[in-house]
Length: 425
Ligand code: GDP
Image 1 (cartoon, rainbow, N blue to C red):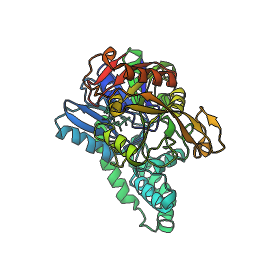
Image 2 (image 1 turned 60 degrees about the vertical axis):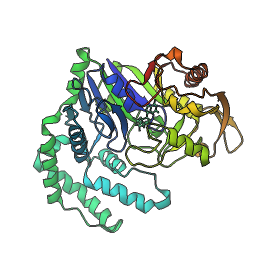
Image 3 (image 1 turned 30 degrees about the horizontal axis):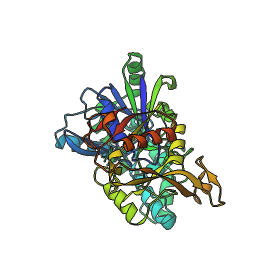
Image 4 (image 1 turned 120 degrees about the vertical axis):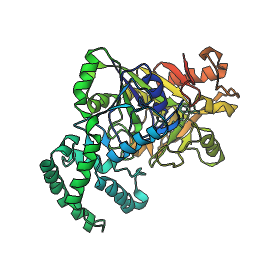
């Protein structure tokens, strides 16, 4: 049985924590897209971790953690993360890397930086981890698959073909030194050897696990609104964070996907450029940012201050719908305990003065303003509450409101960043 855990919004919804919780009862956890650009925060008995590339099942020794073919594999980053877990006393996890996964090359990271510099004020707020150049090369068919690291002839030939264009851009557009193919071949061969014991045909592994009745979790990175097709293009990422794509990026049959668990926060947060209708500026926003997450709303990868705002029913309903959620997990509910009244965005007003409740495409979205209603707050700290029924009535009403807005059942509510701080409803 395959379950996907994905984000309804702009990312940072708390998927890492939910995956860590659900991984306990799973056999395999798979990353199916994205790369080391996102950060999933996990707090458990080993401490606090920001996982970038490793699947969130790495804290459970019985779980097989798969890096699927859809991932942008930065080998150095992966090895560094693994070493980091080891240094902090986490027993060695089981990792399998798809032989079809493509490898992040040094020029991808460089091009990402140079391009954001060139764009200046029009930049996309990239984390500069090479993601956009990586996926561009993959679809232009000049990428390098993991399996190609083990055939020097193929590797040298493919790099040489790609480098003709890359070096032209490096020298003449960005005015940077050209890349030497021999040094690159040597570097990549060495990285290939370091991961060799983890490399296998993960598609076969997953199909066999599924047939054997194992539970497989597909772990999405970012959220619906960063999807290149369905999100706020061009302020999106370069691979699809949708559960539907999970089947492709992981390598499981679409018919095996039974649960789509869509994570959303009790308020909004987004990092990077692009329209964010509910953005709160001034002291109200500063306070929500300071109180949000486990230590304020700051990016787990970049440390950048995230934009924050009230819950956005328009964006979240759309995000949940596009994911095809079978259930919603509401996180960070504890954060709102300081507010006597909680504004929620129930509609947008477009630049033309029209009130809309369907999430629009980017040009209209850019001119939208939020239409708020307020719900009563509960004015107490709900962390430590043992049962859902024990939450204050106004807090449960807030959950009812979000559930109605999402049009999907909320079965789990997270009331703190730690593993055990989750209530079943
Ligand atoms: P992900 O990328 O979706 O895994 O999300 P991030 O880890 O980037 O961001 C989620 C933030 O919320 C992190 O700081 C988590 O530790 C924190 N978090 C998750 N669930 C809760 C919760 O229920 N309450 C609080 N206060 N923090 C939470």
